[in-house]
Image: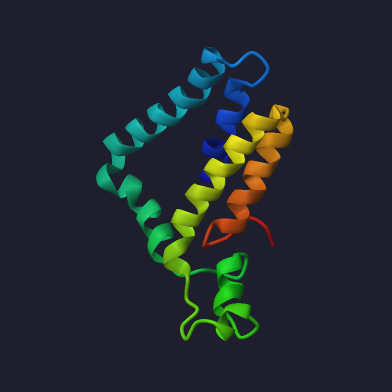
Length: 134
């Protein structure tokens, strides 16, 4: 769930119709995030950022497409000897997210639809999936 605000804020902050940035919306999203991490860092130090490293280093889980691609039913087994693509999940997520952003800008999609597509793309390409969905 930590990724969701970071993923949807750009779609709501950028007014696609007039091509201007909604500064107050962007500030109202970024200021609490920065203050929250700042206070957390003052209290717990570098341990504040350990969950990011943990999420990046652990393997794919059941709610991720990368778990399927590494399993017995993976179509990649026909082409690759080892189909463990967990290391590619972050670059794939970054590229897919950027492409979704560009396509939504190009098509001038409304912010709610754009944010939904961004969240679904994040859930698809995030190697750990979403532990809150069960």
